[in-house]
Every structure is written in structure tokens, then in C-alpha cells.
Image (cartoon, rainbow, N blue to C red; front, side, top):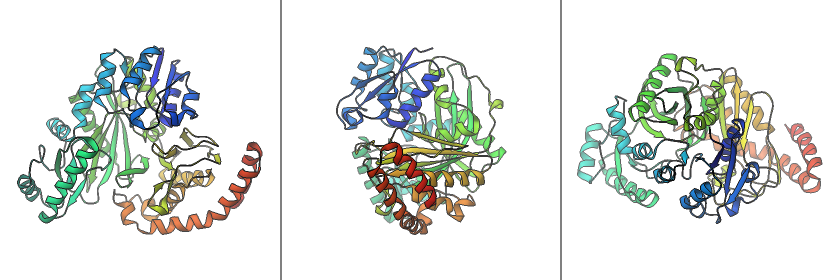
Length: 488
């Protein structure tokens, strides 16, 4: 077992990895940028070292600095978290070269699945269903027109090296296609340094369902069920739940077996996620994430498996302590990403000082965060404040518990997307579980409902701001809770 690991990330995911390490008796090493000097993750770690700079390129994306700190601190392994360098084959290779254990897959496997064109070919060879489309890079408009005509419009043009919807363009007919290809190539080249694109059939009303897998170095692979990730804005997930409302035992078994077979076919090791498009009883491979996901806590809540702890144990050479038949789904879990952003200003980031902060609690409530009262949210990174996760015996109970937790959440200072989450939870279509990745775009009344919620709570927010300005921290917290709950 490792004695010390470095966590090459920040905020809540860094703390999440350090907590798992602490439970395993492993010391943790944090790295931090200038902007994160007073953040929570360097305070939580056993050791912390500065990276300098505030921009990610100067700090959390600087492979040489991170490797040097790992060697200087005698860290035997590096946990990359998610984002930043977590899916960068060069980083994994640098760890391999320096004989530092990378808590994730090998650089070769990461490179294989990082390019979507190569991933499609590889996965199709394993027998997994893929969305009809090109088998390679689109090299010109003539072959693009030919394949699009064969599979039928509308089609979607995607960046081979992309993610998060960047470089994605929809063409509804041949007239749209040339512009879609050129725009996608230009965006992909700018964002990823690789202008390669490919074409897929555009699937109407798709659900985004992903399967969590764990694979050890001894050939054992299991899946931990699915997550429903269809509530998205601009291809960025906002609310996730597990299990999926559309899932049946037979469908879970079939999708799980496909995911496990994909992992086996590429000799995958560690935690990973196979993402699928699901529509009208059919599912298709979309991509693989070769890291722990932001939404991993909901799977932990319904299976009882500590995914991050298993990542560390797998990297240390341990065997999985359970087989597929040991994995049971218990209850329902939902995660809301609480972001410092303004829903009424096109969800523009709203980084600022947390003048007052109190997270919710109670049975079945979990908050993963890296913030505290008086913390200043930096402008350089994702404006996530926390991940709010709840568990209930049923989906209905989980929804009501999330609703209660959102109404207990006190955040004074930045604008947040909490009112928008409340509007989604109250939506009848969401409550029925009738979801697709177009849900937010189609439910146009959500912003009107959000506006009403913000207006209703304006007086309450003014009272809370006044309390936190005039009272000591302890007195302010007590007074705020009293006022807040009375206002509910």
C-alpha cells in the first residue's frame, strides 16, 4: 500500500481524494495555485506545496512542476481527480516514466479512448452498438455529404479530440452541412489543437445514461449500475440521478455487460465511465471517460462502494473485494451541482466572496465542497461551490429530500443556480422522469419559474446579508438559520 499520494487537483475533488487516502492510512500532498493559497484543500492535506501562478496553465496544468513536487515530497502515487490533467496521456506517461503510480488507466489506454474516432472503432470491434456515422475523420465536404445522405439527416458533426459539447454542430440538411463541418473543424482546432471531426446520426430526444465500471490489475471488471445525466445545459450536466427512471433489470444487465466488455477489450484498469445515448429502447456507445466523474457520489450512495478508495486500492495492486453479483442497488440518489452563476444572465459565472455560508444536513444528505464562510471564489476556475447529494428510499423521497436540502442551503454573496434547481425539481415533466438532453431547452418556463423564486427570496437574502454584515460569525450563523427557516 502507498504511504503518501499527491492529489493533482483542487477544491472539493482534491478533498474527496484526500479523505479516501486518510481512511486508508495514507498521507496526502496538496498542490495549490496562487489563487488557492487560502483554499481549503491545502489546509486539509498533510503537506501542501505551491505551484505558482493562478491561471491553470501556470499551475494545475503544469506537468513538470507537479511531477517535481511529487518526487521532492516522496509521493509514491498521484490522483488526478477530474478535469485538468486527469485525461491527459502525457501526464500519465510522465508518471510512468518517473515510476510514480498514476491512479488511473495507462497512458496508452487513455490515448486510445481519448480520440473519439479511434474509440468508436475500438468499441465497435468489441461488439458494442455505436451511433451510425463515419468510421474515420471527415476529410472533405463530398464524403461528408455522402455519409450524411446514407445515414439520413439530421446529423451531428463532432470534434474527435473534444468533450463537453465543444466543437459540436448539428446539420439538418445538406445546405447546413458544409457550414457545420467548417465551424466544427475551426472550433476543434482552436480548443484542442486538433481540427479532426467526424459525423454521427443525430438522435432525437436522447437520454444520456452512463455506466460506472471498476477494473483491477488482475482482470476483474464490474459495473456499479447507471447514472441518468440528461439534465444538461449546453452539454454540461446540472442534475444527475441514480438509478435512471427508465431503467429495467434487463436493460441494466445488457448495458452493464456491454460496458464491462468494452473495458475488458482495451484491458482497462481503475475507475471509468462508459457513456451511452438511449432512445426508444435502444442504446449506443457515445464515449468513455477514463477518470472519476463529478457525479460519482450518487453511485456511491446507492451501492455503498467508495469509488475513490477503490481507485487507490486498484492502483496499489489490490484485487476488487467484490464480484458483480455482490453489487446491489439500494434506493435512489440525486446530485445538484451548486454553482456561483446567475441563472437570469445566461448562467454567467458569479465568483465573489462567500459572506455567509451554511450547508444543509440531516438524514440522507451529503455535501462535497471545498468552500467556507469568507472564502473568495476564484475567477480562474469552474465556479462550482459544491455538489449537493441526497439519498432516499424511492425517487419521490429523494426529490423531496433534495428540495428540502436546497431550501436549507444558506449562501450569501454570489448569485447561485439554487433557484433554478428548485424550479427543475418542481417541474411536472421532471417529476414524471420524462427526460432527455433537450429537457432544459424544451421546458422554456423554467427561467420564468426561476425568476419568481428569486423574487420571492429577495427580501430573505437582504435580511441574511444584513445579519452577516453586523454580527460576529457565530451569532450571524445562528441568527441566519433562525431567519432563513422562518422565511421558508
